[in-house]
Length: 151
Image (tube, rainbow, N blue to C red; front, side):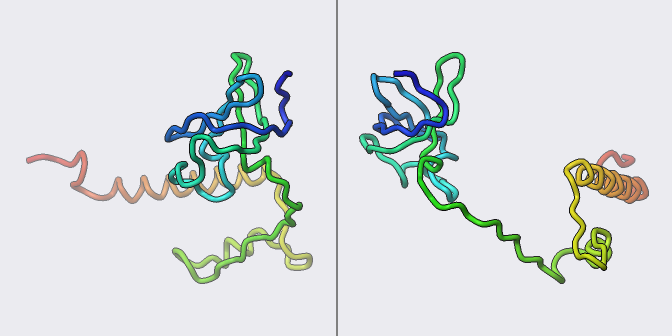
């Protein structure tokens, strides 16, 4: 039986490490469930979720050329499609006034303007360069600190 990406299989946990769990599938084939693929929520200690000997259902997420098999427990669970719910916007938190940032991406006649990935990256790069130049200017004008004159 060949292991195919996307297939759901039953397996037995044979070993646990700090980064994941080894699961034995059929015919003695073993795969790894990375700690990030154990549960939908953050997993600090894998021992809180799995024990050696547990029977688990896993989904094959990748098969490497060298034979390593990547498995997922959280993707093996059947759950209904979740509708997208945007995060609530926070107002009045953080540094400065957010009005200019919010209005920059808004066409007042039609609501928020959608940006594609390239536009977001270009905006991020410009904002990042602006912040970096401001930071450099403010640190160059100060005396002392690191690299200051010794005397």
